[in-house]
Image: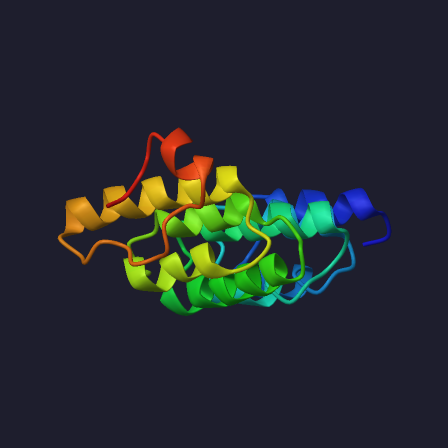
Length: 164
């Protein structure tokens, strides 16, 4: 393939085999990685390989969110995404869409996903949304409620999702 668009077209083609997807995951184009991550039939090992690709913050965060939402993302892949999201939060980045998607995934425990609440870098809105999703999951799965420090100051009273 010579043109970048040919890589994207191949990534989206219904006839692309898992081996071709593995090869495409190594190409240098972030739009191809994202195209692969939107395929419902992409194997989990390709999703794991995509985790190690890097471009701009925006492209990286979009790719993380696509992987976190993907049906084929198994527990090991989701744990890798979680680790990556926590590292990015600590660095002051904003992988919020991926973090919120992870909070809804049954493959991760509420305790595992609630670790994002204690990481520096999460905005108030992110923490409120994360608490809401984790609280819903805990209630619906009979898991232990999330254990975190309450939101500080007026954030606590402003939140409609306050967890006791």
